[in-house]
Length: 405
Length: 231
Image: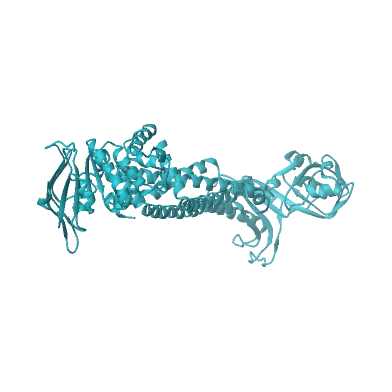
């Protein structure tokens, strides 16, 4: 084996340009495969993270305006969701596990010791943090006890907390004023663009006396796994609301519905296709590399016909020639493939902060099992690339090979 | 001349060889020939007479169509590539006009290469190769590449390579063809010295001075042995 490697290293040293060209073809193929796989992994990871919350298993509803006349009512009627729709939906639709409502309260200021913000806040249920994808919270979000006990607590965005208290770090546990009442800051959250303040829905309703109208409703579903089931649930929710608010169940505009679960399923499928597409593109890129290697190996064998003739005249068996050419090919593909893997992974590591921050990727890297699979694929590919030229080399008669100068 | 009569290293009987083509070329016609152990023989003939084809058949580099060829008692006919390679490696040492050294291997590595295909360890290969280089007076050139050697030195490296496996037969194809007359004489002297140690040597040449330096000249005319040429 050591002898074989000495032979290979001599041939490689003697054919530097050829080796480098072959190597570049392979390294580039692998580099592209790794970068593509890493990028796709980043997109898939990001999607999975975003969808890991229960919010994707949900259907969101907003008040709308009828577009069809119904039972003597003209179209163009405003349908406003009410908090007691919540109980009706939970009670009547079997696939609904939970319903949360939220509403925006505006027209007042939130005042802190240093400054104030105008606008208002959103009165919500605990699930809202998942619905709105608020993950980074210092302290906590609104919880069930806040809802039950009608607590006057508030969750602020980091930017607003910094504005109200001069320093966001000082806000937690302190109080702000809103609607002429004190609210205790129980959480500070970080989000790329959300700035709303959140308070418990029940507290807000108790303070305002509330008419029960809400801006939006989130219906969580469970035990379903197909598009059809998701659409069926959506239709049942619409039917319940249509009966309660007297609009045509076929009217798409009376209540706006965003069936996130159906989108989730479709996106899930899209991710499978994305992964598949990346593998196909990657493998095709790799194949291009292999064809390149095979071509160069053919040329290399052609260039070395005379040398092969000499070797055969002095006793090399066809299998000796095949093993040498195959081993050469495998060594070249493996070494340069490895360079491609390392370069690809290094680039992904280098771009990781930028991709994660700006481009919506999450951990765009390839894991070690993929790298091992790619390495194995490389060795097989290298062997394949060398096999045909090697077989061709042994088909030339030694006497013809010796004549080839 | 140390050959022993009736002890044939090479025994050809009615060998025929035709190259197929639009007009098939009958290159060797009923060639029968014995070369005994320890002989120094030259095969001479005009260009196209069939002498190179004969050499290739003798060297198991090419097949023949009919007849029989025994090399050291082994019938050489319809051999697999593997068996042919094995016999070439163990029984025949080749010396070519253009030396046929591998240009990126030094003299020692070139000489040791046939032993690589016998699976001999590197240390032993190098020791045996160095022995042959010393025999050829080239020990100080062992680590030089062919490009750094003169024509005569290259041919002596090639002869060392031919000898390293201790073959039954040395086949030389125009071994002095690429050398000046002085170096040619030196190389022929090497062959003579080897022959004095009992080595059987067959030289294909068109050079009469080379032929004259051998014990026996076999002439080929139009693919047949000139009967007058044998002794």
